[in-house]
Length: 72
Image (cartoon, rainbow, N blue to C red):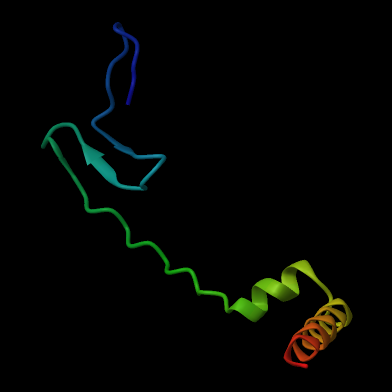
């Protein structure tokens, strides 16, 4: 924690970035709080974020038509 040269440092403070409690008198810090795991999104969830179901259906139909045309 940066302080001015003439400022009196606090005995304890909380880290703004990690949330840990630091104690100047002991020279120790408490362990960081565990981070909450972020749920993973499926490929389909990512698609629905960018396009509507109607748009996706059009794209799938176009791609299927292209694939079926390549086979002939």
